View (cartoon, rainbow, N blue to C red):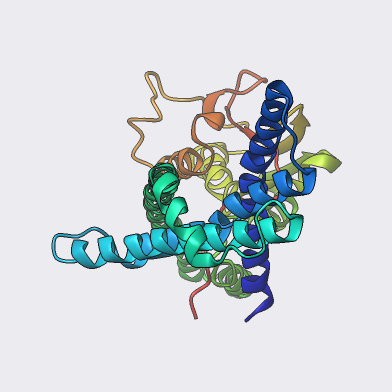
Length: 374
């Protein structure tokens, strides 16, 4: 028997002993005070011993009843065998009680020494069976209740596991949708540099692109990661973009020390930074600045990505946006943190450009991690 199995048996035995000790105490007290009220007397050892013999028989009997109910259910075809097994257990309980009370009575002197088991069992079977049948029915009812509780608990567990698996599959699909989108954009940047015969710059971008690709593949099974790692990825991405934009692109990053430890969805910042470049800086002849700020505000992590480009189009709606990155990011936030996470696009504080604001619960421990595929 393994240690775990032995521990389970010991815990169950201790629990059943505690349960059946209650009627021992109640029966002993009732018997004792009843004798006092009638003016009778009986050795305390016999009162206690008799109740122990009567009730502690139910400890192994309870285990047998539960085991029999689970192994021999009252099915359409199996009910005769099940009834026979339960009747056998009940008879064993009656015989066990008669024998143990006889032993206790002999030891305490309350039962004459010449009385044998046969003489003891006949009056016992006349007085006790009805009482024991009621107790047996109660134990069997508890066994039925425990079985139904276990079934419902297992069903809820399976449903919860299925829901988790579906949610993980959905998150993985969203992440796989984002990765090709990001990679194709990087390849387009390389193609543009090659067409313009900016060979050294194209080579630098290819090398940087290889590092980004390696990162994306290595983190393919990761749903969230520390903000510090996400910022490192974004900085590498911006270095590649700076090759294209030269001095037209300025970058400012301000992140609080607490914020760097916070867990955020993988590839959280890159789609927003890409939008800031594509729809903001790219439209300015003199370029502009992309500002990334992050700080902890109580129980929330507050992130802003701001650019100096043109503001949002009139009537802009995130729901109606055709961009893959923003809709993908919103869906991933909803899947990971539900209503606790928000993504909002608005006018920058400088009243020129756009600011994307993300607020998610601050946490340093992962709740969802996908298994990496070999």
